Length: 257
Image (cartoon, rainbow, N blue to C red; front, top):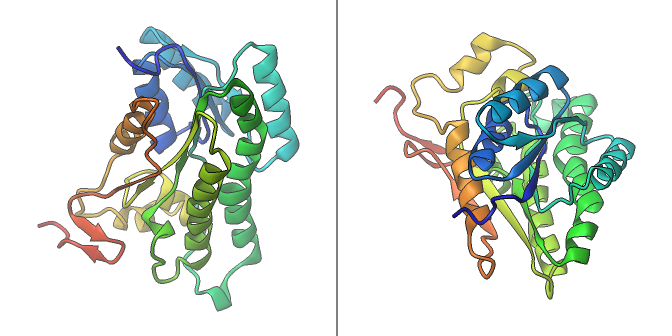
C-alpha cells in the first residue's frame, strides 16, 4: 500500500508540466491533492480529471509570489480541514538568456520572486503546521542549474543555487523533528519552460528539445513520488535526474543520434 495514501499534498505550479504530472501521480498513489497555480481553468480541468479517475483534488488559484495570498491560502486550508502533509514546491520559471551585464531587471525580479521568494513563502506558511504535528514532507523542485551555472543562465542558475541552499538549510533547521526536506533536481525536461523563457516564441522554444530524448514531466513526477514514498526513517536530501542523453549541464549526446 502507498505510504502517502490519504495524505494531503499541495503542489504549486500545477497548471502544466511537472506540476500537473505530480498531481496525477500523487493522486494515483491515493493522496488528496490541492493543486495550485495562476490559471484557474487549467486547475479545474486537472481537478476534474483526477476526480474522474477516482481521486480527490481541491484546486486553488494562487500566485506564490503573493505573500498575503499565500497566508490566505494557509488559512483556507485550515478552514477546510486540509492540514498539509506534503508540499511540492514546483512553481518556477526562467526569463531570457541575456548576459548579466545586459540583463533586464524585470526578468530578474520575476525569477527571484517566483523561484526563491515563492518557495520561502510556501514553506513559511505551511512548515509551522508540519512542525507542530511533527509530521510532513517538503519536496522542492530544483534543477541541475543549481549545481553548475551555464552560459547566460546567470540569474536563473542563481535562483536554483538558492533553492538548493534553502533545502539544505531548512533540512538542518528541522533536526529533532520528523518533518523531511528534500529536493528533486532535473536536467533537460520537455515542458512549457522554454516557451515561458522565450515569451511564447514556440519556434525558438522547440529548438531546445529538437532531436533530444529529453525527460518528460512524468519522469520527474516519478522521482518526486519515490522521494515521498520512502520509509519515514529515510530522507532523500537531493535527487539529481537527467535524461540518459545528458551527462552534465554541458555534456549532451548528439542530437538525433
